Image (cartoon, rainbow, N blue to C red):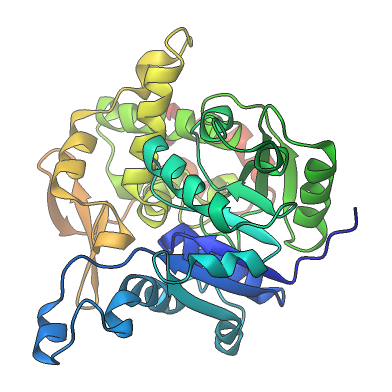
Length: 360
């Protein structure tokens, strides 16, 4: 079967949903972006005399999320005019429109019960043969497809983008028990040829591949930072460009991705792999639990490990859990690497360091 992707529906317009919608718009695909209808009016809507039946209110969630995404940095959209390829709506009034798309991507909250409810609704309008995938970061694919029709299961799998969707290369494809070979082959090629990704077919195991490795690395650092008495600036200095990684390094990356997303995956691993040799590493440190309580989730809530106040970027002190002025991180060992161009060659110097740069 020859497939053409002319229009995609993205269900869920949060950071990932809007980012995925923008990335498809970047490559010329029309996008239908849907989210839930608000349950309450805002104060501004009340003053305008609007009601819960007003279209602008019913589409407020999706429109606000997309607007925030389009203003974010790094930008998810190649050119602002490409945003015109994205049509917004809500899952109550507009879900029937998915009958006219070629691929439906679910990007709602990481809760199995909610995802299953969404798929039940999708199946009412999805035309047979349409691709249906989930951007889950770790919920088992076989759980999500339970109870769905044969055609649904045949065309269903996980397609996991990483945040930010436009820039990160890894594209995990996770088949379910009934996913057809034709669907897997198509998605593998489409990811490479059109989305500009490195497609990897992963097994349906907890957190798949990228997050299983990535969460292990980040959780290891969360425990190590307290043991070694490191500041978040020091960690980001040591885990960024000096070792060939992006400037966002560790803690800035968590702020972009969202601490809640990371915690959800870490908790899933702690519960899902009880016999893993690194099981205890997936247990949340106290400072992470406190940040979750305070809803210091990163960019989505305006503060996480870093917080922007006017023109200043404040850093979180992990001991006091108070924000303070940024501290410049410097290490004698790092000074020795400045004349070395290739990151792989810097490791020879880094591991021999006698300061914290060498220990970490």
